[in-house]
Length: 227
Ligand SMILES: [Zn+2]
Image (cartoon, rainbow, N blue to C red):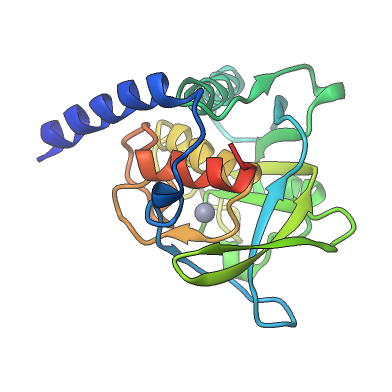
């Protein structure tokens, strides 16, 4: 099963790399994703954030992160940028001064200083993305699977990888899993507010360690960007 999935993903990725320069046909835009919804706005519209500028990512550093390797987390940042870029959602890796997505990693107390929206509801999660939604004004409504979703301006995001639980014990996941977590969190930083309903997608809320984006992951974030 795992091998079959890998072959499928490899073929999907090859297909998308060829396909990337073209716009997504309307039929695919309407069928490539079924999202679960994390919240609704005051008008009852599902909330989708999206960047309105070229995504530029930087590694911001590791802070008091136990035994974890800063160079590995930096390498995972590069991998996430390259993976999204390879399949047609270009993310440039830049220095921190010109980045609009910045990746931090560390112990929870240090990460709270970076992102104070980390709360009890996220205390068992190894990754978190802070959405800075600019003016907060709806840009336009768009349609997907017959649902109206409301787009918001998002020009800057912080991604934090969290090493420990709320009482300071290391989370029960391997360092390698953070590579997958970071790939997922960058997806949020690029515009995903909710999660995929498909367990094989990186953008599922409990994504497995495949380290590869599916065609659904990619098609939807392209839809958000209007590619
Ligand atoms: Zn998520």
